[in-house]
Length: 478
Image 1 (cartoon, helix red, strand yellow):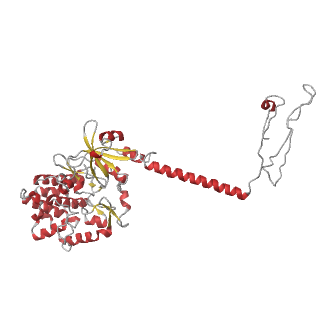
Image 2 (cartoon, one colour; image 1 turned 90 degrees about the horizontal axis):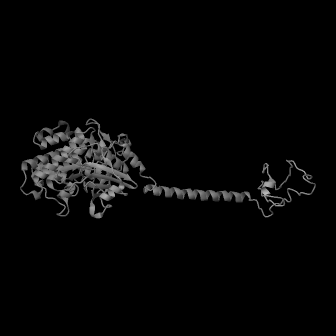
């Protein structure tokens, strides 16, 4: 029954040759029974009568065989199961580690997402970018931002670029990487940084921008050393302020899709060789469906530039960008940082001091001393009043960016936008003070100065329903 149609002559290869075969059997009730059945045809008389010998000469049972006990069998099963579980765990951990490092395609989803976007930019390979930056040579490093390091690069055709490299420790993450690429690739304006392309290969996430010779506005205004701090005359400051305003007007009112930047600040305004301002870093940008609607979203931005209604309630409209613009405009005139400069002990920040001087009729005291008397007091007053109007505690009282440009160009009187009967009971200064005093309870500040909401109420997940457009530009470091 085990060896069906067994041919002994064939297996033995001739007469008188032994064949030994072993069989495993199951023993029940401690008894082994052996039955021999003749199931074929044979003879002892053909070809001649004789003794041909038995086909089976002996049957033996291994006397040393010890069947396993049920207990031993159970232990064996547990041991095998333990070894298999440990092996699987080791393989899983190794797989995850390699995948995170990009060796097993852990970053392929970024590549798929990038290829899925209808990008108007190019996709670079990692070897191309390494060649352009001389393998990320430290001497080519332009700066460091929340996203990661930024390097100067030269493409094969001689084009100067700025390559922004996502740090492996960055909190910004691949979501913002894809968001930034999608948005900036669909936007084109002289006051927005141009994106040449991107790369998501292996464990590298990279963005390639036009090179901005004069780095960022924060370095030009607040540079710690004289070499970094540029000498900005009054016409240049005006041009920079107007450029930022035009870029925001395009985002809010003129582009095919309306965008709220969410992180307008001096370090996200880059300057080209002619000192023209260009807005960068769209990693936090959100789509806005219109001025009559708002986005309830988790808070993300930079303290000192965030509108109170957004920082405290997660209420986001384009007026949040207007508020941030007002802070930057104030910094441009004064040459001082709203987040680090404290004029007097009783004033927490620059904007607070500006409102106090406005009440006293001494706004011109804010003008940067580096300008001396080489500026127009009338133009300075216009820019300062516009800045304070933009930072109104009530978003409904802030102008649109079109109105801002009209006021800066002298086409609209600023006073026309200052009165609102419905706001007479509110104290904008008190609201700002309340925000700053309670900021530590509402917000947790990340290592790079970005804010993340610590309140589950404000950090509504409804922003997930807002579509990721196709998007992106850069951190201070160009």
